[in-house]
Image 1: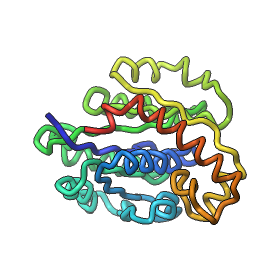
Image 2: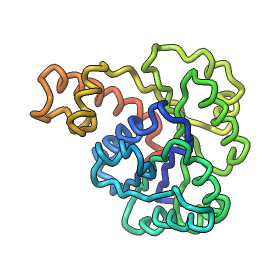
Image 3: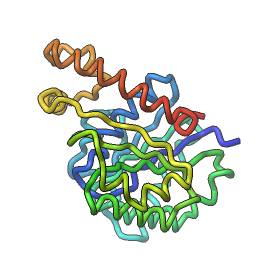
Length: 233
């Protein structure tokens, strides 16, 4: 039975919250006591690496014949329980090309790992279209985590009624909710280069912001707990 996880954020739509959710997931995994190896593929904005400085950069802005740089995410499996990969905006096609080139989805048993696509659900048409395209190419070849980004409200009517959501559920996707975090606290976390989990006890934040971080971290622990069997061996 596979005992490792490679969790990849494959969408290349910018501004939908990939890096933020990746940091929340990193907090959850480290709190769970598993060995995490994190990678940031966004050399331009490097949001994930700024907040999770132990994340290693991989530059995927390369020609197709040089995508072997991504072998690194597989090479670290002996030393990690979970490999977490945050993609860059406009970089999804490179990652998908790498998966096709290596046939990694077909090699999961040989590597003793499960490949999980973590997708961000919003009411953005382009983001939902990308999910549909990923389902076309990888449907049953991977497992699916759906993070419903509720930063703009509690309902995602467009996504909820979409064919993409129906297909995700057919493939056994696990859905979690990412509630809204106060903009002022989120901005201060960015300024201090802190994840929500690390912000709970940071003197760089006001007590009110630390309190918001405690509450938000607890909420996300509960949400990720819904996907525990998917995320943890």
